[in-house]
Length: 484
Image 1 (cartoon, rainbow, N blue to C red):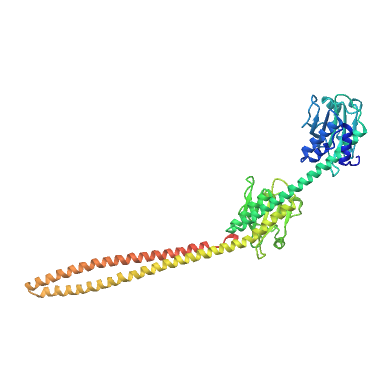
Image 2 (image 1 turned 90 degrees about the horizontal axis):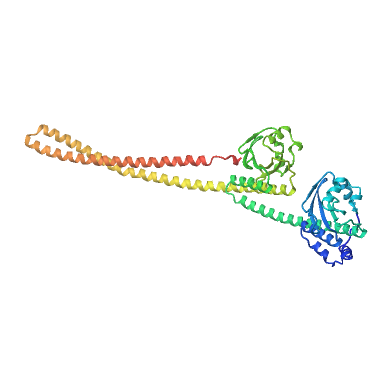
C-alpha cells in the first residue's frame, strides 16, 4: 500500500484533476456516520476522476460483498444495495488486496479475467475499472473502492491511482476514528444507563419490606440487566442441601422454584470461598472442568452457561447464591455483566439483614397489639365475671326468702290441721299470700339464673377467643425457610 497522504495532499491532487475547491474534502471530514462517509467518498471520486461510476464493495465474507455506496452517471445501471455472491468473483485475490494490491484494468476484454467476471462487468456496461483496497486499522480488508469507465475504455494514470489510494487510506482512518469515538460515546452512555439502572435496583431492593420481596427483586432485575434465560436464588441449608427460594425465568423454561437440591456432587466444598466473595463465570459448562454429576444436574435444567455470585448477610455469613443461567447458547460473560450481577448479590445480602430486622420489628408490633387485645379481652371477661356476682347475690337472697316462706307455709299448714274452721279461713288467706310471694320470688330466681348463665357464657366466649388468638400468634411466629 502507498504511504498515507495528508488531507492537504489529497486536496491538492483533487484540485489538479478538476480544479475542485480545497474544501471538497471537508465534506468527507464532516460526515458523521459510516453510511455518510462511504457515500461522500464515492461522490468525491466520481467528481474528481470524472468516471462513469464509483462504488464501495463492503466485504460480507470471502466470496460475498455488497455495494454500500454508489455515484453513477444517469443512464447507466444503478447497483447500490446489490449483493455479489459468485464463485467467479476474485475471492482468490482477497489476501492480495489486504496486502495493498491495486488493480488498474484498461480493457476488461484484454485483461485475462475469467469469462464469468467479464460477463458480470459487461452487464453493468463496464469497460475499464480501477480497484484499490479499503483496509481497516487492524489490517483486515473492509472492502474495495472501485471506479468504472463505461462509455469507453480508459488508461488509468499513476496520479489517479495515487489519488484513489490516498482517499481510501484517509477515509478508513476517518471512518474508524469516528467509529471509535461513537463506540466510546455509546459505551459511556451505556455505562451511565447501567449505573442508573443499578442505582434504581439498589433503591428497590432496600425498599423491600420482606426477605421474599428482596430475593424476588434480585432475580427479576438480575435477569433484566443480564438479559439471560433464568436467574435463581439458591438458599443454603444444613449439610449439602439447599432450596431454590426465588426465580425469574423465561416462559420456555420449566420452573425450578422450590426445588430442593441434595447432592454430594454439588460444590459445597466452595462454600467458604463464596462466603469470602468468590464469583464464578462459566461460559461453557462442558469445558469448565466440573464434576460429571454437577454438569449432568445443570444439563437437566437446560443450562449451558452460568454465572454465580454470593449473597452474604451484613455479618459476613453466607445466605446463598445468586445464579444466572444461559440455556439456549453458550455465553462469554463480560466483565461489566459480572460486576453488575455481583453488585445485585451484594446489596441483596445486606438488604436481607435489614428486611429481617423489619420483619422482626413488625412481628414485635403485631405481638404487642395482640397482647393488648388479649389483655382487653381478659379484662372484659373479668368484668363479666364480676357482673355475675351481683345476680348471684340476688339469687342467694331470693333462695333464703323462698326457704323462709317454705318454713312459714309448712307451719301454717300444720296449724290448719289443728285449728277450728274459723281460724282455718284466716290460715288459708295467709297461705294464699305466702304462695303469691313464693311465685314472685320464683320469677326473680329464674331471671337471676338467666342473667348468671348469660354473663357466664359471655365470659367463656371471651376467654375462648383469647386462647385462639394466642394459638394464631404462635403459628404466625413459626420459622420460614428463608430464615435458614
